[in-house]
Image (spheres, rainbow, N blue to C red):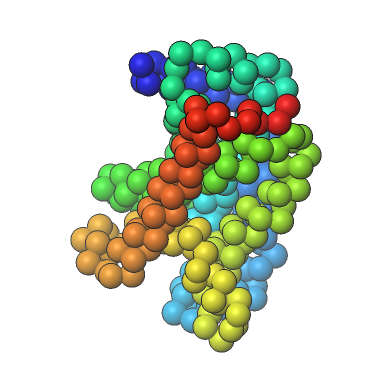
Length: 263
């Protein structure tokens, strides 16, 4: 009863993505342009303690992968507003399918779109000096899964009560993007920055980035024995799980007589 409608909604997200060429190009072009431009601009002055051997292009690479997860989560949930405006969401709510299939379908579709974009970008790793192993790729994909789950579920929570896509973009600009920027994607953690370092430490996206970055530079036998990795995994998984549970709770409130979402 849950699996079939969930897969149907997820498939619809994938089909919609491929039928919008401008969305495919935009979601891939923006992270790549930022990677190229920021990498070229900051490369001469990038000096991070303990990372002297890394170029900025190589340091920024995990952040670009994380940005793809962010955009996949955003665009897969912004369609929630469009579906409501077009009447599709009302039809889904009136169907016998459980309400949680809306959340699970959107999240699954967002993860599928994210993997389609991010996996090909992994092919660029050898060209910037990163050697990938089969086991490393598996752990990177696991990091993708946790990060995209968190972004998509959080985006769902925001989009569920939004009345317009312009309002959602405003929230994205002042909330979701800063979470990415303060994750260590643009610059490394530095305790000397004071309050900024504190924000980065409590930011769950910082720990999601660790799940992607660690397998790029270390063998699983190394980072799996590092307590910092397990701390990052615990925090990132808790963030993703909490956002998903809140999204499921928010949708299930309709079954207990709560007012429908605004049209």
